[in-house]
Image (cartoon, rainbow, N blue to C red; front, side, top):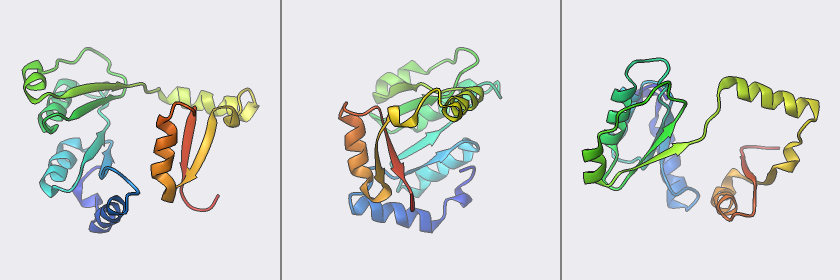
Length: 164
């Protein structure tokens, strides 16, 4: 989402119901742009557990500001996930990280060309999805899907939405 206005009350209610029913553990949204507006709006709402915010460090000289904001907004004992491919080193406010006991976690990501190459490999039959997608579960079984994914017994677990 790019603004708080895109996150409707209906979306929030659906997540609240799913959390109450044990279908999801955390409520949140993904913000790929407009983080400076979305994250404070989410904090003000007071109902979200997590935000996945993609910072494209290559598009702006403001990479440090994005990291500073993420760390400043993380709850005490929280985690800041670094997603994307930084074009350069980014400074981290270590006194705040230490004092608030914030964990910084990297996430392996890929460049747009990698996705095209992967699709080409699948289309040519050079690799088969069945070789690494070892389990699928419908959305109403998402808790089980996460259990399977964390069991160490599966390569990739997919959650399906709607009819397959």
